Each structure stands twice: as structure tokens, then as C-alpha cells.
Length: 518
Image (tube, rainbow, N blue to C red; front, side, top):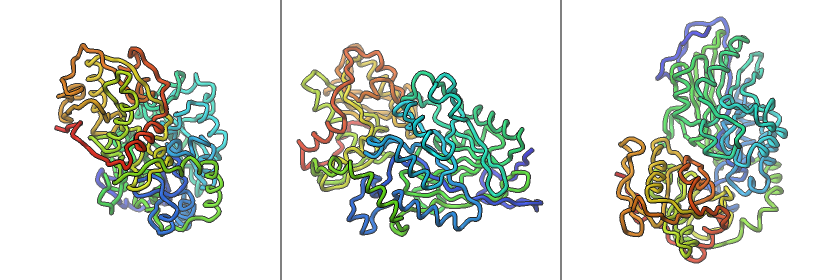
């Protein structure tokens, strides 16, 4: 049985002399989202000339070098991923999981968990990806036995061997994946704590005492799992794009964050960082030391030439569409995750305005866009279609429908119900203004709802435009599933936004107080 040696606040403590020590370096990524090419400081596409000038970050070619160098610093290392390799750029739209599998195999991953975006195109694409990878992908908190494409194939956990020791890996995915993606009706998601503890107990019975959870459930859930389970040594996180660091002033917590005896790590997103955690275990499997820091993958990290060439080859079919200049913008259009999921943002206004303008002549009064559907910012200057598709990569279509004012208020309440967690359900709007107070209980936070300059009428039926994901209940918007006169097959949201930008070029980003935070 493990003895508990680390205090909740400890980053690194040395226990009494053990008969043997085992050192392990855990290299990790999360929320890569098909950023095979270098990214800008806004997490969007980075022009070739800017990359040459040293102004870009990430990209698989730099990760090849960074991982090779990190492994050279350690005589015992593993490489794991916290989920969401899928979705985010034209590479995914064109190749689905094919290029992700190829590049992850090249990088030498030892395991990953299923992220919610791995289900964006249903179990079919995930199953195809699983067939192509050389390492296990795991998900403990779901029953897939009724899904023939995944049953008996998608394991909850596995045990790998490294340096003569057995290491248990357990996968964890968001419990609300059925709201966030398209897993289908055959998969049931369950509580993370009970699921992890069940796998830990099975491993303990086999004598495995070094256990790592690969979690795509978010920083707060990871802390809950650490607090409410026993036997978990490390949680490699994802989903909330959280930067943990001991040196970066923008970090949300220390690296690692210690909860009881469990070291929690996460390394932002998009391949901008490579997490490097060094852990020492005693012979009973207790952590006696845990230290490290995410490595910034900037221009100092040399790109691997062979990988650059391969990605360029795979990019060739995409060039015409993504290099097409569609508009100009006078300033950067901000699509930062922490802004667009918490308050009015310039990218949210652009997208909502574009949606409403497209269908206003159909009697539509209100536009709603989920903040989680906004994936990047756009730099000032020329705007390419590739940039627009990086902001809006999900191939969502415009949906129009009718609901009462009471239902709209219910939707707004859903939107702000998890604002503290940075949930993607936060809504950006057009044709409507509202206020909210996050200090109040969820369900009672929204006030001052105005539509067309008049207070919302709970009994009046309003015309609404959103994207097909939201209209069909994604991000908790179940109140829209039974909307009247629903039509989910409008034009692609990225095309609508690009055309609005072109019609209003040079576009000037703005906010106008349509969302008030009390």
C-alpha cells in the first residue's frame, strides 16, 4: 500500500532514504488541434516570412527537435498527450485523423487520452485513427460496449514498461462529451472520480504502483480527481488549455500543482509548449520529488527539416483555399479563449454580426454564437480564408429557428452557468444585449435582456440564428432542440464570416457594450 509523503503545497520534497529510486521524465502535450505548422502569438496561422524572422511558435517540426533533446536529457522518459489532437485547421478538415496519426507516430507517443474533439466526426473517424496509431488511446469514464466501432478496442487503461518498471496509464475524457461533440447515442459517459479509482484499484491488485492519469477533463476536474482518489501519482491534463508554470506570470498555477500526493500538469495548447515533468519514486511507488517546467517551443528550437518537407507536402492541396485573401482588417480581431468565453469580444461581435446580417431579411432578430466555437484571433492587415477557417474550423452551418423570449433567457443562463470554468457555452450575441452577475447562483445570473432596443418579452416568439451545433443541443443548449421552424442547413459559418468581412473591408473590430458583466 502506498504511503502518502507529499503535502498539498509541496512542489518537491525528499522523503527518507528508500531502498531504491526510480526516475521518470514525463513529456507531455495537450490540445494540439492540428497545428502541424508554426503558429503566431495569437495561436493562428503564422506566415512563412514571420517564421523565418523568428516570430512563430510550435509546429510539429519543432516538436520533433524539442522531444529529441528532452529525451537526451533523461535516461528514462515517456511521451503522452492529454487529448484533442483533432480539429482546428484545414489539415483536420481535409485529412481528418490521418495526419495526426502519422505525426504522433513519428514523435513517438506512448499514450494519449480521448479528447472531446476526437468525437467531432463520430466514432468512425476515431476508430480509423485508432487503427493507424502505434500507441494506446484510452478512456476510462465511458461505456463503449454498445458502440460496435469501439467496443473491445478502446481500453480504459493500460500498463507500459519503462526502465524495468511498470507504469499504469488511465484515460479520462469530459463527462459532458455528449454535449460537446458527436459521440453518438451508443456511448455513456460517467463520473471521473469513480472511473479513475476503479482502474487504480485494478492496477494496484496487479502490483502496479506508478500511475498516471491522462485527463482531458480540465484543471478544476483534475484537482477534484486528485483530491478524491487514492493511488494516482500524476495527472497530465488538457481541455482547459491551462498554462501551469513556476516562471510565467500568466500561469494559472504552479507546475506541478500538488493536490495531496498527486502532481498535476498541463502545458497550454497548440504545441506552443512541451511539458517536462521529472518525477522520482521510491520502491513503494511514492513520489519523493516532482519538478519541471513547460518548454516554450519558440524560434530557438530548430525545425526538423524532414518534417518541414513532409508537412509542406501535405499542405499542398490546401494552399489555394487558405491563401486566398478575402478582406483587410485595420486592427487585430481578438478571439482569445479567456475573453470570448467570459465577456464580449471583438471576434464574437464579428461572427454574430455576420450571422445576423446574412439572415435578417428572413425575419431573424437575434444571433447567438458559442464562445467555444471561436478558436483563434486574426492579425491586422490582410485576412486570408485560412485565417478565417482557423477561427471557425468546425464546418458548422447556419441554423435558423424560432423560440420564445423565455427560452432565449434560459439559453443565456446556460451560457453564463459555467463562466468561472471558461466553458465554451458562453454566448456572443447580435441583435440582443444582456447583463450577468457571476456571483449569483447559476440559473439566476442574467438580467437586462433587450432585443431590438426593447425588453425581452417572455411570451413572444423570436427568430434566432446560430450554428447547427448549438441548435442541436451542443454546449448544453438543449432548450433549442425542440425549436420551431428549425432549419440547420444554411451556409458554412466560416464562409458567412469571410463574406461579411469582405463586404465591410477594411473591417474595424469593435465592442459596443452588448454584454455587461456586473
